[in-house]
Image 1: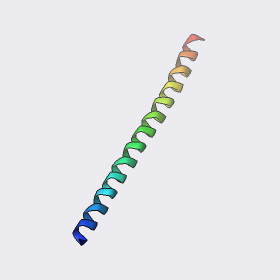
Image 2: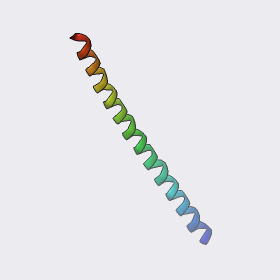
Image 3: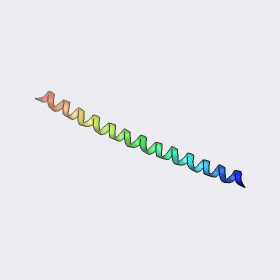
Image 4: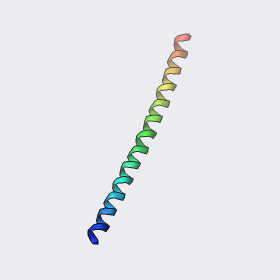
Length: 49
């Protein structure tokens, strides 16, 4: 019974860690994309002038 509880806690923690890592990965990927698009627009604006 105790082993089952430990296993379930480990599985839940593993899912939580993987899930939060995925969310962080998506968030930073979106942030990086946003920064790159802003930089690209600034560069194109400067080259037009």
